[in-house]
Length: 299
Ligand SMILES: [Zn+2]
Image (cartoon, rainbow, N blue to C red):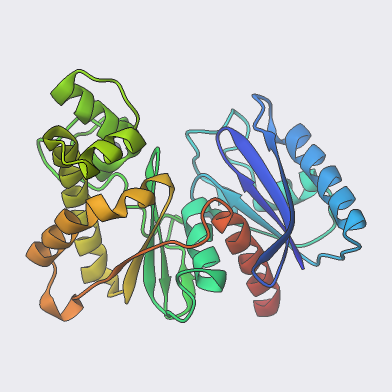
């Protein structure tokens, strides 16, 4: 049994996880305060949770919204001041659980969750891509999570899919995220129709055959295909597993995604099936627990 914590820009979810299954779970808001107070509170709540469940976890997995390398959270634009630059050992001290702590980026943890208990079960190599308010990615290759030199292997969100594409929050143009993330789809639809509606409602309109809605999803799928083609070429995965809220619109994204992929990737790396993730929101928690268990076994 492991403790698992998933820190996001708006909420912190925490859980007890056993063999890929969440035994107990709760959450709190991410406060605009330094991490010590917040994680101290999470640690106390987790201990109470374990007491109630009569559980004795032996490690902690921590999912963070940014790359972790050299035992440090290197960046996390969505977190309050004070989180970035902390050492993993500092987080462990703040939690005060007296257990070994293993931390990694959320998209990689999500992929590990799918590997341990979801759509990646039985696969050895796959690319996990999260489609939501941002686009993230993580690689599992030959049964191992790929970290990379700066903890950012597989992060395709700011890969440029179109040289003259829409402006991106990162300051450049045409990033996959600027075309295919939820807010980007909404912006593109607004540009075409003047209507301010959410990505899910746009998807409903696309399913009903509305041309403008179909066009923005087709465009998003093409950009995702560019990202998947690069990954197919470099990492040769068996499949892509798509998670995040927009993965529910995979039916709309898939045709142009696969077409764009076929145009770009070498035949030896195809076909590359695009599978929907199975775990939903708890994927990073389940992955964090798996990462912690794996960390203990490998140490
Ligand atoms: Zn960008």
